[in-house]
Image (tube, rainbow, N blue to C red; front, side):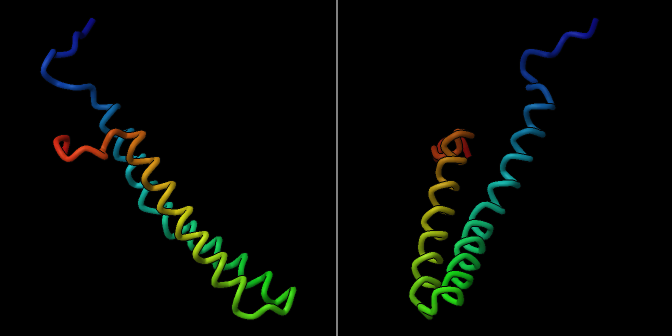
Length: 83
């Protein structure tokens, strides 16, 4: 049976953090794109050019930043001393 060295963290936790951080990089653009497309579709459907596009794009930006901050807080990377 192989024991882990006390000063070396397990490798799997590092891979999980890298995977979680890489998904955070896609959260912001994906949220903006969803808001943009929803606003565009609703503008064409309801004939309210450009108002719903602007509103839903801003909502997508806000949602993306909120998701980004929540993800960073979940990973514990919101503190400067850990970087």
